[in-house]
Amino acid sequence: MRDAVVVVSGPGQVELVEQDAGELPDGSFRVRTLFSGISAGTELSYVKGTNPYLHATWNPDLGLFQPGAASARYPVSRLGYMQVGRVVESRAPTVAVGAVGAMTYGHRTGWVADPVAERFVPLPDDLDPLLGVYVAHLGPICANGLLHAAADLCGTDVRSLGDGVRGRRVAVVGGGVVGLLTALFARRHRAASVVVLDPTPQRRQVAGALGLETLDPDAEDPAVLLKTRWHHAAGDRGADVVFQCRGQAWALHLALRLLRPQGTVIDLAFYQTGADAARFGEEFHHNGLTLRCAQIGRVPRGLAPIWDRERLSAETIELLRRHGDLIRAHLVTAVAPFDQAPALLTDLAEGRRRELQVVLAAIDPDQSARPADSRR
Image 1 (cartoon, one colour):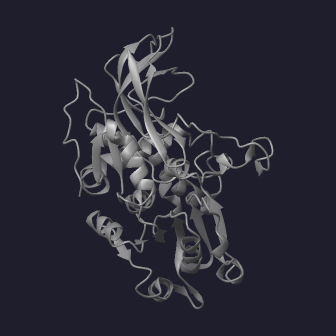
Image 2: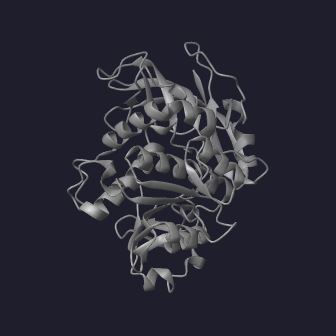
């Protein structure tokens, strides 16, 4: 048995490589891929050659990038973290043949997994398996953003993801997949207002189709508009919390300008080229603001025993149950055959094709497939 694997062999060079599927050791299980979602942030940074792991040494003990040999090198053979697979063989008593679950094993048509070392999140029967691409990793990224907002307000006494947004004015900068799912999480948890800001008309259109309010930051100054609308007290106007979901310096600068004094930006973005234009001498300094990075590698300090990755995945499943039809119709803009992955990734990295969410569909005889290439 052979598996097809997406490999980035160099900047702008993506190919499908066949690998032996391997034996099935005791305690492990084998999945065949149903769907594999493409992340436009981390994955494309390897295709573009901009990922910091390609240019410096990551010292995990010190938590520093340092000069030296790169921590990641081409070829990159484990790319992607949004997979849905069906179990076709199992020698693990906890994972049954036929089960469908979300995993993070990269773009490949099959995988042998150890249930002790890897996560397998079973998908409920009432959830479209294509939406499972969000369950293992990307949905928890967004849920972790809300968790950071809750911890900013409540410390370690966080009872619900809504603790940081309920009844509060929320702005989301960036209308990509992370921004839109974060906005849906905030609305679901009863934020008083949720506004998505993005200069791209297509992204604002998708946000509107999801029932979210939008603003074009290039049309007029959104900080003036929202601070005029969101009035707390004399000299106290603006968003209670801003989720920054676009990895560009102008977006961080905008997020800071939207906040009320002593407000907080929860930053979920990945700044591949840094953020030199953030201008920390302006609103950040004069309004006493807070910037918190909500990186999925950790939850807020003191919350790990209660808010683990499984709980964040469970929160994601509930969001998808509530809004799955809209997300499937508007957020997923292309579903393509797995063998188109090299061309898709290079086209996306070089800007020849623009999509919000691309999902690769592998052939599975037990799965009724949707159209191979559906674009909206």
